[in-house]
Amino acid sequence: MRLAELSRRSGVPTATIKYYLREGLLPPGRRVTATQAEYDDAHLKRLRLVRALIQVGRVPIASAREVLTALEDESLDHNSRLGTAVWALPHGPEPTGDESADETGAAARRTVDALLARLGWEFAEGYGDESPSYRMLVTAVGTLARLGYPCAVEDLAPYARAGRQLAVTDLDLIERYDSPEEQLEAAVALTVLYEPVLLALRRMAQSEESNRRYGQGSPEA
Amino acid sequence: MRLAELSRRSGVPTATIKYYLREGLLPPGRRVTATQAEYDDAHLKRLRLVRALIQVGRVPIASAREVLTALEDESLDHNSRLGTAVWALPHGPEPTGDESADETGAAARRTVDALLARLGWEFAEGYGDESPSYRMLVTAVGTLARLGYPCAVEDLAPYARAGRQLAVTDLDLIERYDSPEEQLEAAVALTVLYEPVLLALRRMAQSEESNRRYGQGSPEA
DNA sequence: CTCCTTGGAGAGTGGCACTATCCAATCATG
DNA sequence: CATGATTGGATAGTGCCACTCTCCAAGGAG
Image (tube, rainbow over all chains, first blue to last red; front, side, top):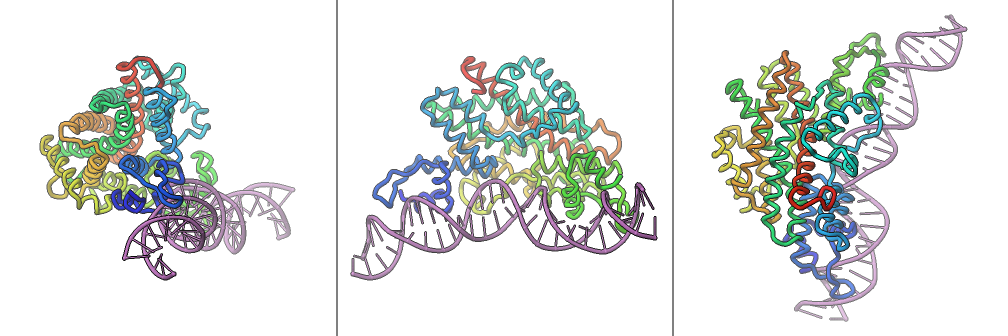
């Protein structure tokens, strides 16, 4: 199919597709003549993934490119590709440096390390403390503390328990796919796309639980 | 304290504080003279909440203003304020309209309604289908389907279960605070600030679970 | 041949969260 | 009291980023 049809089928404007091509988010089409190129279903699928990453996952263009590049990096094995791809997914605002320096930041780090030790996770060691997720967690706990909501290990534990359950569910979902390529794409897509699902369900459950505890007074109270 | 000291104590540039004052995110200080105003600890606390909403929660200025206005709206009772505030929190990209029209969108809505029916939640009725969380969920499920990852009620159930556990934990945390004002602020702050905590823990758990299943091959694989 | 379409490239747009610059009133100091 | 610094308010500008517009030459359709 031509670019125009790719646009029609995906609902993405041609100008935007051209932009993605330029940015390397979409591999170039098979050149038919000097001025025309042919696109296939793989392009369509990739385009939808890109849109999902950018619009739903709010992934910046540059990060999306890293993720996609890792997915198809032939020089890496399956696990490395997945690791690199998920690694490149955004994890919220990077710590600015001054917040890891103060006492609150240090306390946050200790709390997180204690939590991981209790859980038996190995993030605090080796490559682990460079993990974006680890840094994201430390930053979030630090922010909570600075706002006057100190959270101890016991406060975090329920969230970690929920995270474990979710991870098991996630990986079960991914294992439904047979080919490594599909699994890779599914891992990225599901990691990003289930985040809004989870957050929406949490808020709805909050509302439900609030109504249960405090009566039928008001919507989403 | 003066604006400069508010800035020093919060780490927020004076220009930014002025901007927040203009935008109504921060109530004006008590006017001392025609050209000077006095700020107190309440301003400091509010300022930190604003920063948390904007920087961590990525809440747009306009939404943040709505949230904060609802928090201190004297004409509403406790529950209504909380409901309005959480209602105003961002819920991802608004559906563009064309996605609720097609068959995939309709199927997504049916799936969500079925899930809620099974859970016994009442979101599908009355005010409920206008709930931002509900719309967020339908949009996310629709996007998943369009990407080729259809999720049935059984697929969503584990996430809903996790959401319920989280909501109970959230409300327990909020109940620690005695005054209604503190509870309101805590509800907003914790809803927003625990989102990165949860997402980080989920990703770390994914990595952990992946290592457990597929060996020690690679980081975060 | 003529007109339309295609794809590539660079510059332009719009939204948004700030941020730099002014300015007059006021405060602190000698 | 003189004088320089500071304060807070208003306005315009900045930087980023995801697009989007405009142009263009090469191809294709009738």
